[in-house]
Length: 215
Image (cartoon, rainbow, N blue to C red):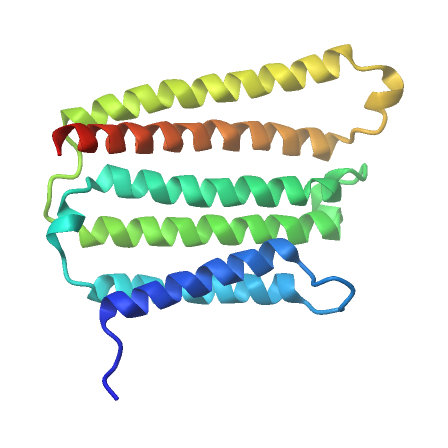
């Protein structure tokens, strides 16, 4: 039986990475005491790793060349930063206890899960950069898109910080007593992540719109 082609293997590993990510977010299945969150994290990291190898083996195509390196990176950023935001929201209750993060085991587990997503994103982005080695990756159009996307990202981050400031400044004392310092730190990190996500979304949309206009 012939071995699957590199593109087929890449599709299979990306599908497994998606399944692992779904299990990672579910954490458990109904009332069954199964460590699906841990298994999903392991499956996701392993699938991303083998996807990297499959991506190296996929031959370059004309369709791939029509999409700029910056657009590839932007769409990947949208997916991974979005996943990190979802993971941060799901794990936010772990930061509610008034304990330093280093002495809070639940917060430590949440941090490892989020860190796993960041590592996978950095690895995949690095491999894409290597795949495009020897080509011009940034030109004037890319810089212009980066400037516009950065403005949107900073704007989203600013709105998030202002929202947190208003929440802290105008909330009743009784309500503020239920908000721990680690939770406030987590809200600030979430505002930063939302700014980064907006940056990636705007960049991806601008690249896509520019590519559609040329086609």
